[in-house]
Amino acid sequence: MEITAAILCGGQSSRMGRLKEGVPMPDGRPMIEHVLAAVEPVASEVLFVGACHGWTIPDVPRYRRVDDKYPGEGPLGALVTILEQCSTNKMLVVPCDQPILTVQLIKKLSATKTDSVVCFKDQNGNRFDPFPGLFNRNSLIKLREAFNCGERSLRRALKQVQTEFVLITNEEVVCLRNVNRPEDLH
Image (tube, rainbow, N blue to C red):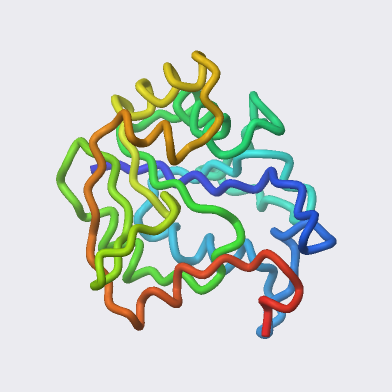
C-alpha cells in the first residue's frame, strides 16, 4: 500500500518565536528532520505543506513542497490542500513539531487496514489531536465539504467522518508531544 506522508510546516510559530521546522534539537538536527526520519520509512512520497521557511527541503525526487492553498485557515485547510496534491489514496499527516515521533509508532498507525481516519488513543481511552493521523481520499473529500461550508475546526469536521483509534501505551504517549514553546525543548 502506497502512503503519502504530509508534514505540516506552515504555521506562524508565534509561541516558539521562530519557525519551528528549523529549531535545533539537542542532537543539533532541525526539528523537522526528526519528524521526517519517523515518516520516511513508510512513505512513497513526502509533501511539505506550507511555507517551510525555517528549513531547506533537500532535492530528493520523492520530496515535494506544496503551498498551502488556504494559508491562515488552520489544519483543516491544509488537509484540503493535501487532498488536492496527493497521488495516493492513503495520507499520513503529521505536524513538523512532533520531533519525538518514532518509526515504530508511525508503522503502527500506517499498518491499519481501514477506510476510516485513524488516530492514536491512550490506554485510558483519551482521544488525542488528529495528528499524526492516517487519512484516506474519501475522508478528505468529506472534510473538504465541511471546509467549503465554512467549518474551520478540524475536531468538529472529524465528527462527520468515521474515525478509528490505535491504542498506545502510556510510554508511547510522550512521543506525540508537540513542541510549541522554547521551554518545551527541555
